[in-house]
Length: 335
Image 1 (cartoon, rainbow, N blue to C red):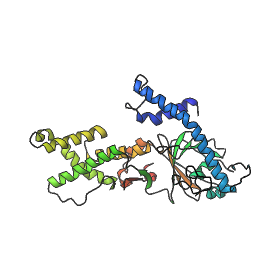
Image 2: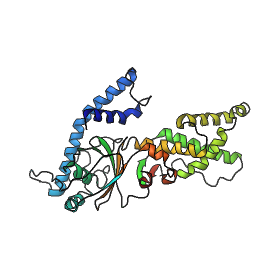
Image 3: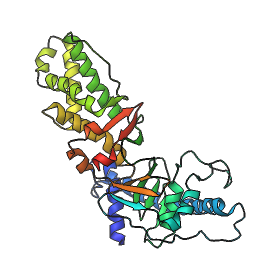
Image 4: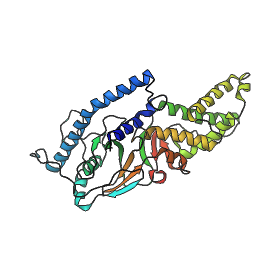
């Protein structure tokens, strides 16, 4: 990977933070913001190195105890592929499986604690196994750990990799919570709130009230059907007599402004679902990144994250849900 490739990947990973979707070097505010990010990145390099050194110490402690006596971290016996733009599988070879399993539940210590003490809850099963498998093989992959809460778990040659350990690659895999995503919570609250309002005004029975933090992807379609009915009504005229309709119109205009225009309920539902899910995936693992689904048996599937492919998938809405603001996505069906 050339220096220009690395620079391009970095710019792509931060472009969503700028008002225009990219840093405009003619805009003083954008320039200031970009230079600040670059300076922070340079400061982080030393922290990433420290993080990798910590993982190495944890590995040595797990394999040799408190006194490794200058022993190096062992290298893998086999090479393992990584990269590309498609989902792919690997299997940890039998001659590497013993160490893979020994490191499976190993975690770095909590901040300020010694190696070998109780592990950090921020690191899941298999993360250090995967770090070792690629960083200590002749696979051409330099692995570093993510530094902050918005970083993916690991970086492979600068490319984000989010690590999840489950007993299968199929079904809903957790994406983490979106409770801090106030904008998407606001939009979901509008959609389900307007849906319930139409049912009440129409004297329909409200069978169940759907909470913006607890819903299936398919629940968005019937909710959006009532939003579309309101959208196609001349609310401005009604608002001159009934101010409530002015508030409803403002809410719908806000939805359209955030999600883009939509003419059908399914189109609006997909726009909402895509914005919610992509806002998570753009941060973890980031554009062009991977979600690595691991099994202790050494079976690993790297799901290539393609957000455009996600939006175009006819099964998108039936393969994601939110439970207590924790997103679940069926990566096997969608990626």
